[in-house]
Image 1 (cartoon, helix red, strand yellow):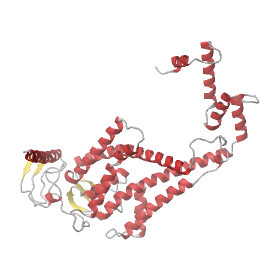
Image 2 (cartoon, rainbow, N blue to C red; image 1 turned 90 degrees about the vertical axis):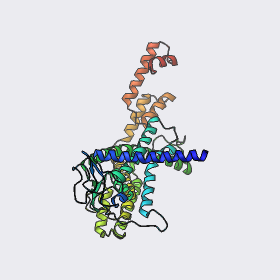
Image 3 (cartoon, one colour; image 1 turned 180 degrees about the vertical axis):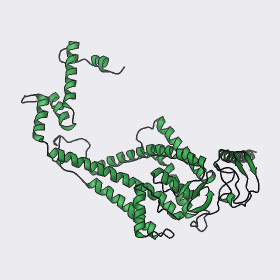
Image 4 (cartoon, rainbow, N blue to C red; image 1 turned 60 degrees about the horizontal axis):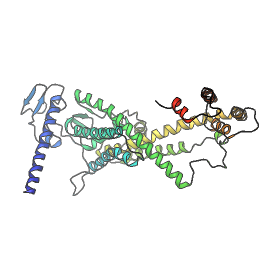
Length: 418
């Protein structure tokens, strides 16, 4: 009886899920995104289809080339023009589908990676953001591959996307490359995709920045521990390295440039040699540079299913290396300008000014004066700000009448939070 009860429950749940999918498809058709129908199998089932438009069910038996509804929705059955994929013997999935699935898992794992790497407990805002991102990602994949109709130079007619095509388009959205070779076919679908582009950039931009920050902190910490570099300055080291301020290191710029050029070189080789792509050397170089710079003119793009899946990974990695290159270049230029400014500054006069600010004309310093001197020397503290703190201290001493020291209770009452 127990097994029968479980079987009946599972059957009821399966029927409910099927009915829910049907309702979702009908609602999407009523909205004008698509007629009631499925994916490739539905498109290939025959010429007779059911279509739902702004005025309700239009009927059965509409033929190819005959409009089924207004310009808000599809004008016929889904296109059956699909690009060839690489089949794997003994597997129901193609190589492109498996790689596209890995791409989806990689993106969906970003919130989980943040939760695993974060040393501190995530806030409710982090959790809400992660749940929203995963829900958005799943819904977009479903709508791209089952509901919304797209047009492209890669096929004739309009139809939903395959999984490799969907990840290819999503990668263009997330990297803002935007070739324009795959676009929504109808107005309401275009508006829906437009709003989702903004949502995608906000959600993934926030999550990816946090993941990169956490990973960077962990790598820096591990490198410091393994190399024996102490975080704190040693007692026998000077507080400020004057010579280092006059030098500029180009190592980060060289490393980031090497990463970017390596990624671009891999793209050039792929677009030139991969069967079906067949770009010339100059076309492959042009496509790689324009793509990784996120300009994406669209004159050249992926034409095979394998090229689309490769492009989905390649765009994410390449745009990230470009961001690292730009950041390293900006940082290097700032350090170079700072070093040139330091070279033209009288650093000996600056040092004497710090000493005078700390102890006046006295020949000796106590601990408090040395602390003030250290802040001026190493932290770039504004002498005026430091002076305002001293004035505030003198005022509180005079007000409390307690001699040369302040009570903790006085500080809590006057300077503490409400």
